[in-house]
Length: 302
Image 1 (spheres, rainbow, N blue to C red):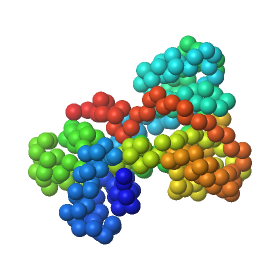
Image 2: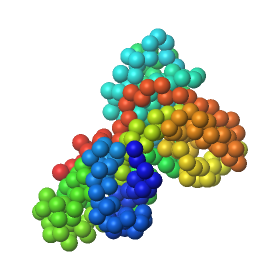
Image 3: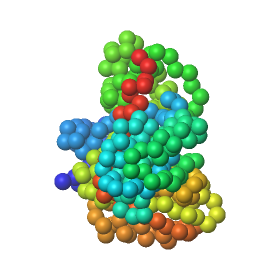
Image 4: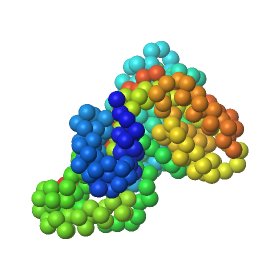
């Protein structure tokens, strides 16, 4: 069972997966040796994976859409078809007005239009309603940091590939693997991190922290959707949050250990200034959930 120190280390590594053991130790009040052992145990037990997350803009996948499906007949075959589509990053059977929901990531609105046409033609799909994200405030499985203009060469891409596989690879290992000096490898990695190209974070296995319940929600707001999204970004239990236009003004996901805590989190959302209509859907079965660099790794040059 994870204790408060493990939870604090997880949060720190989610913010900066390459934080030094000394910095982590200072944050939790333990020795560097004790923290190193705890982090190693968290990784070896499968509670966390520390990986690099590539910014979607680097590979031209900046547009995110959330799709709610009307389905005739069994939902399973349609979800299987969704899972095979490269643009689909999340798909789940749901309880609510729509029996299936999905998220897609594509290059631009033209590509989103084409993807939606293909999704509507899948067997069993009777129709679909779409939310097009304008701003993503929180995503447990992807980087939402600002991407600065940067030119990448072959050595940069080789470093990115290594970081996507092992976010805490040492500078010595990175240097050896790409044929640079340790100082040169460090300089390039710092540049990649500071520019937003890659963010090293801890991906937490939900079952390891007792986060076994998950629901999606969509909001209609009074006033500025961006201001509402910004205000809600740091609320507990929210693992995904975005504002945009279409079916909703804001969509998100709540994750908690049990139904009682989900209800409490949902009540806090309902009480937030600017929130109007609230709709929820239960993720009965998550069929596909792509995390970290799992999708982009095959696209990265070098």
